[in-house]
Every structure is written in structure tokens, then in C-alpha cells.
Image 1 (cartoon, helix red, strand yellow):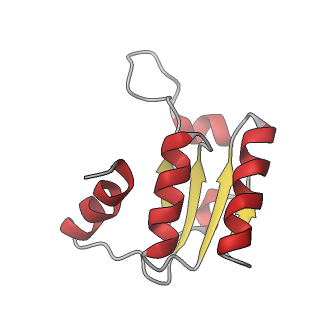
Image 2 (tube, rainbow, N blue to C red):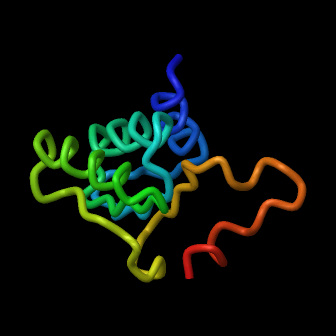
Length: 105
């Protein structure tokens, strides 16, 4: 199972459907790209993507925008506007990493 299919399946297994939802995703690397495609294929209405490496987020947004017109926008936005927040960055798994939402605000 790929990382992206596993991500959506994990949400489904917990009873959370992404269909029609809006998603804020931090991280536009390989994991973020595959998770974004999986979310969009699963019916997410809108996904905002933010990465501190602006070129990475711009590139991913442009690519996804070709395949999912009108459903992919650039972050950051106030995260309270979104139904789901996804951390697709490398922040968080190590002790001492900053809390992601504090970094985005």
C-alpha cells in the first residue's frame, strides 16, 4: 500500500470522510504530493498547500491545478477555515521539533 492510499484509508478507518471537505496541508515534498493527490481523488473540495520552500509549493500547486482545476490553492491561510489539517512536513517526529501549528501562525 502506498503512503497516500494508507493516509486516506486511515482517516476512513477512524470514520472521517474527506468527501466535500477543505484541507490545509503543510509540506509540498514527495509525501505531500502523493497525499494531496489521494485526498483530491477521494473527493476533497479544496486543498491549500503551504511549504516554506515557496518554489516547492508553487510547483506542486501548478501541477495539481492542471488536473484538479479550481480545487488547489496556495497557503498560508488561517487554518481555522479548514476541516482538516495535514502535516506532510518532516516536523514533529523528533523530540524538540516545534509544534507545527505554532510555526504556521
